[in-house]
Length: 349
Image (cartoon, rainbow, N blue to C red):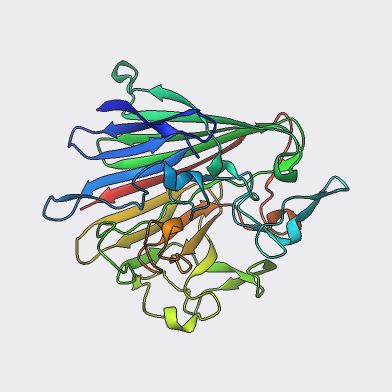
């Protein structure tokens, strides 16, 4: 195992950004950076042993500094949507930034993806039985950030081991009650980032239910069965099979309820590329996962030139608009409590 840190450029105000590469004993590696606590390359072999990057990236820091599609970023303070950008906690109504029509998306106009996080490198200590190298990023979001109450201290930690397992672990504490929902927004193509349309990938999702939404993709509060719908991935199915039956969203952009007990690390999804033979398995402690088939990539500078459906996202998270639905798992974090969730990506060839 090795950890190598190199300069990756500077922000507009001259703050340094560092790219950190974690390499395991097989020579497979992942890289991350402190701008947006972002995941960059994930380089793993196909069935013939050929290594390629399977996570969409920009060639340089410049692509991440402006408006972009969220490539690999840590999203917060509240990922996904909050209806009308409003919620009430303890009888107090809060208005946060509206940046998607009349709603709040991914935490507002300047979310966690556009901040420089502090960095701590944590090499595996074999004497203590540790099996992965880690990078821990920390951010302090001030009270009132994008309208959210309370000062929030967040860590996003990446780990990489010899079993080609990438661990993402989130923790947070607050000085005042506030909703928290964190995710990683990586765009995957298991055939390699330049292999074209990803809709031939076969997915299995450990979920029998998903959230119902309105025309703005705001949850209605109803939770639907996937039986006999285009959303049933309980058996492996290509993304393409029913995608034309989803014209309103131009593909999948839906939050699944992951089977099993929230808070326990359990299977969430398995995706296979039949061409390369690469497989990605997900396990998570989160209650939900947003499946997004990159329907709105523009093929311009904001998406590094990649057009729609050339990748997919599996964003483990709490449910969107959770602060406005008492029947959803609560996302309200209070002083003295700790937010802690974990997701594992396992790569097989």
